[in-house]
Length: 135
Image (cartoon, rainbow, N blue to C red; front, top):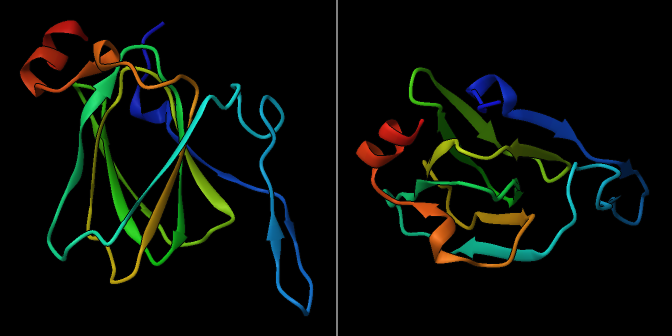
């Protein structure tokens, strides 16, 4: 079954409220449907810059705005949809074979990504035309 933009969804992460500061957490196969094998983050993204611009054949991800905000545009080859991320207790679940573009980063924003696989350049589709042909 091929993923569609409708399979991309915002999930609310557990949030424990406390006057000393709030705490959220994520557990593999509990809050997200995969084992976390890699964690990375984007920061100091210059104004007007874009990130992403690719799809993954096998990798699934959870994208979180840990600080600040940014937009994630998802595309399944037929339909596009925009998600605005601006809360650290919400994450965008990204299934396989969805083209993604990240833009509109606010000053000081931090994008945290939890990935289902270790880095593998062969898993990337970096050309949109190729993505459309594979879909």
